[in-house]
Length: 143
Image (cartoon, rainbow, N blue to C red; front, side):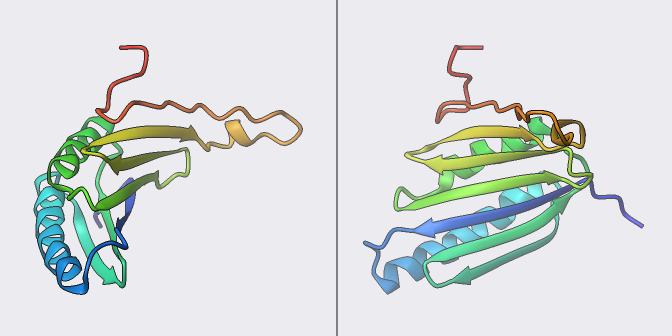
């Protein structure tokens, strides 16, 4: 049985300014581009479904690897049309951490949250570790 430590969810939202014909043309290209990008990082069980003004995506990855996530984000930011905003959520299957990537204006930003049992101890104040980057994937302090 294959081991997949990472579940990935995606949501691409189309601008309300798009006509139906523009939306369908963009969606067809977007599905092809996302499929190819996901295959390049060895994603499996890829599901891409258009629902009205959005495209939903779900797949699994064998490993939970930020380097791979950033590779995918760079690819998505390069082909995502300006009239589409998107999010990718990577969930570690042991529910220890999640990474959220948001796409807009030709770039992406990242937030990571520790959701482990250690972070959720009853009676203790929870301070989830959050890391944010700018829209080019760089840390705000240049690190």
